[in-house]
Image (cartoon, rainbow, N blue to C red; front, side, top):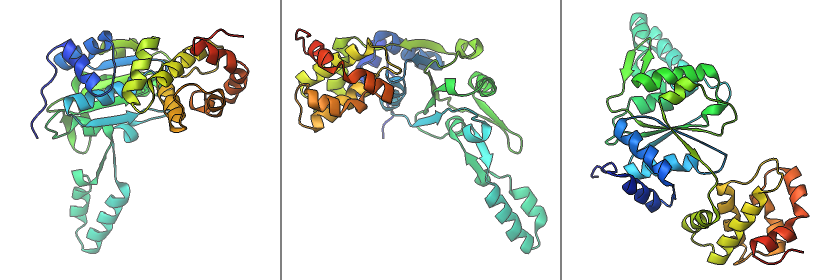
Length: 301
């Protein structure tokens, strides 16, 4: 397969993202373009559900590259993120060679590459892909400061040191995207190595366009009314306001039930597609008639 050329302009990044049904703004496209040209990681921050992870997925498709995703969580360590040894296989190998009377070979062989379990960071650094992969380090804010410090070194030199094998350096460094929901502040030293961009909730027209692009089966009137209803929900005092992903999911759910416009009964039945906490569901249900009227541009009671 022919190698896909990198975008040659910011406008080309926007166009290619649109081809992948991702409607990014110019600030995001600029950060991505410069990240590719300068070999810098892109740090995307924003509220949950605004499209941070989808941006990395779309870029992998744009570049014709493999997406390698590291999902961060509390307590993530080197063994989960970079590599670990396959101890069960090593023990079996030692036992087999022990039985054959070749213990010296067993001790020499067990730290070979075939006994190494490659996790996302090593997979991204040590790759033979025709196109450098896109490494998505998702929700970095869920990890701890020790893991941040490790990433700091990794992103500076694009290399991983394995004591038993030596240092593995990327022949062609991956394109790195880090995302954060800002549940805690990320250390300045890590941010300084990245190009930073904030993704906010889109305006109404853009959110309608996103629904139409990602869920073409949704009728135009329904897409507009669902987007308007979600915008109205975001103005309420909720524990967790719905993101763009929830807007798309809700529109798809209503369309699957045959709706072409907001129907109060179906809206109530599918409210869990947008709101994920019982307290928010209870708080919102009494407001639905007024919010639906607002979304449909009708006078509110």
